[in-house]
Length: 254
Image (cartoon, rainbow, N blue to C red; front, top):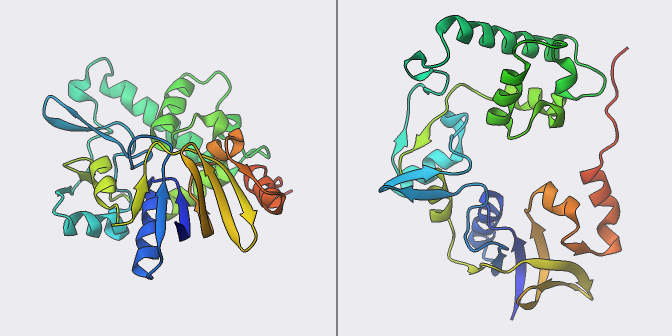
């Protein structure tokens, strides 16, 4: 069977694309290499409680479309201030240390804004041999999913400047919410895509479970997956991929 669109990757982006395409009356197949939908959003049950193993916060919640999707699906959205900056009973981290660590992060943030290094690498703005550098690095991993030596200053500030302080949780689990947003389209799990190539007026996708043809393909896998080369593309998209994975260096001010 041929489809209008093959969507590669059943994470939040792939699910959103499939929802929009279905609403537009298109036939869709959603292809996912793993054995579950949701991508980075993954909720496990532990002792009868939902535990998010990946993303967990509805950031900028007052304008986050997932809030409305969750409420429509009868998920419980936990609103109000977050507790992630509160050290439980100050164990192992007295208030004086907490204040010093926060001051070090704020100073790093100020350097990123006022005098960013030409490298665009956040770790280059750390204070040499700073006492709280390890703390700042850990905090970046928690906030950004990347250590400071892998963090683009321009990208971090673009996100941080646009974000609000409204960070809410999904009581039943963020991963469960994303999985529940799956539209009624054909979903093929455990179906890794090996290549996406032109085939006349259509697109041919070779997967671990045979070939699929579609009029178009939407690829929503991460840039890490693209950079690994596990999906082969035709020469027609090589230039685009190079620009995506290896963008030209940003110009820096004098």
